[in-house]
Image (cartoon, rainbow, N blue to C red; front, side, top):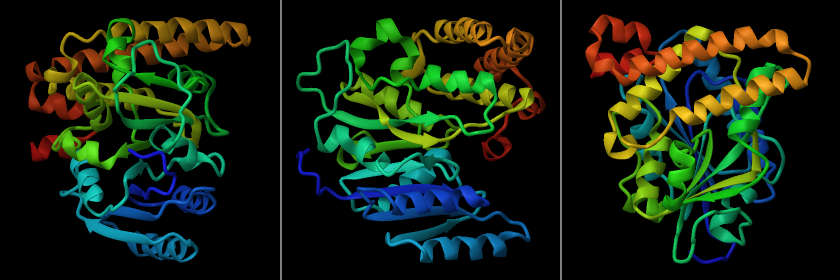
Length: 331
């Protein structure tokens, strides 16, 4: 791809029951030094009586923006983590397509510029491998904790999204394991030509479409860039039940795609996070939070182990363990 910074950039955002964060996101996109050339909203029908109010808010936010914005509507039955984003790509005419979630808000006016720098400019990202002749197929940004973020989740954000940019290739798999494939559509940019060449996101997947795509791309010889300068405010204070369910679904996605994840080390990274979080809590005088953190870790790991073995569970048990109930009903 040319280094000419005039290449078109589009943004795709799946939308469901939008709240004020989406309004703030659209406002911040409008403030970017490098504004997107178009925003595509893939709106899933909420199916409730508040939908009219959501629509009025959304219309106002769009009218306040200088960026051309398209709205495309789908039913809850039609929504699919990979398929909906693939459909959004079809409405894009940019060289680079940025995917975001409706609750991720750019921290400053340079997010788009920094996220797309690996495609349009000189990107300073550390790499352990030989990058000669390797094309960067996607870049993902840094997720920063919100003001109400709990201490453990705050540290998890810094562990998964460090301050140092990085380029990851197939050469990193022996050392980094599954972290080589780590990428997040909360804030990620894709070269459209290479994205289509790779077949897009997997469809009919429970979720984790971003890591599945990244894993396939890395194994095909492409590079994934982590652009630490592209910062979005995005964090959640999830209950232990939701942590269990998320990790169950994560493991299901890995079990259903052995062509990507089979033989790739994953547990060691989770163990390193637990140890480093305990050290962090001890350093900042919050040892009293360690028992709760360990219980949350047990919930997450139990969900992960069950998800890996979901085929041995009853249909009723699978539904109870999963966060994405509609996936199983459609399946």
